[in-house]
Structures are given as structure tokens and as C-alpha cells.
Image 1 (tube, rainbow, N blue to C red):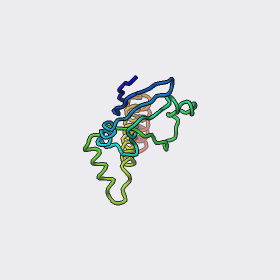
Image 2: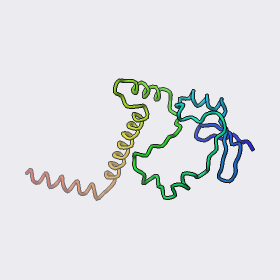
Image 3: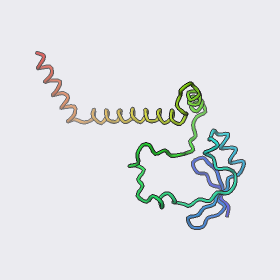
Image 4: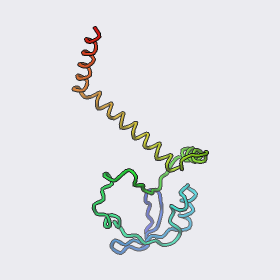
Length: 147
């Protein structure tokens, strides 16, 4: 059995499956393509065969809920970024006393998350008739106290 699989952009060949055990093969071409795409060498699977257990993490940690996990947990992933975005963060990381590139991207994403959350909260409040009525009442009280 030999089946080529694409998993979120990474191409590899499944050479054997036995129950939960899966053996994949990473070719030199696959390795070089990922490396040329900007994936750091320590994050790459070296050319050759690699054995994995499907659902292994879940079996070892059956009660793990990623939604309840602390923010400090970091997940290694392969991510396709526009070249100019990657170049920008690489240049920033090369400045004196700069944070590493992954921390800078993480910070920018957290900032976006917070802005999105604030915008969603604002939209929710602006569409909440009881909130608007309460604000109107406070404004009215405030204006009456000034007079």
C-alpha cells in the first residue's frame, strides 16, 4: 500500500497502516520543498520513514480539552504565510533586542483577537435594547443634575 497524502500543505506518502499504526515516508523532494517554503529545519521530518500512532495524544491524555488549556501551551504547526508577511516579521526579529519571529506573530495575532473581541462586544451592546435604554437613562440623569 502506498498512498500520497496532503495534510495541511505537507505532502507525504503513507506506506503502511496497521490499526492505529501508520508509517509514512518523506522523500528528499518533500523535505527540500518544505525547507524552501520557509519551514525551519528542526520542525521538519527528515527524509525517510516515520511511524506514528493515530490518536496517540488523545489516548495518553483522554481528559485534555484544548478549549480549557492554559494559553501557555504552544502548538507546532505548518502555516503558509504570504512572503511579504514572513519577510516583515523576519526583519523585525533581526532588530536589536527584538522578540523571536514566532513570538512577534503570536503577539500580532493576540492583538487582532483582542480587537475582534472588543468589536464583537461593542456590536452586541449596541444591539442590546436594554443596554441602550440604561445608557439613555444615565445620560438623562446626568443632564438633569447639571441643570
